[in-house]
Length: 69
Image 1 (cartoon, helix red, strand yellow):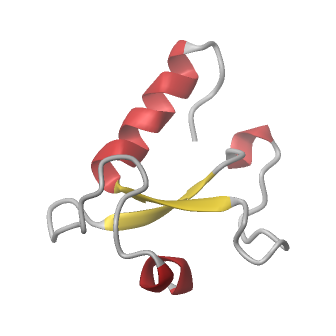
Image 2 (cartoon, one colour):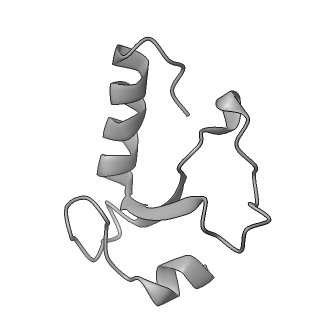
């Protein structure tokens, strides 16, 4: 919640989110690849993405032969 309050827009597309496409916290290192659920670095391992961009990021990771988050 703090991350979204500090940056109330999507890092990828710039949207401020909506009820149908809310802002989410995305792990820079996916959990399935060893990322931490709550990074100890104070949130540096997270970025703000809207749900649409967050879903697309997972598809890109998967297309590169990596598991999506």
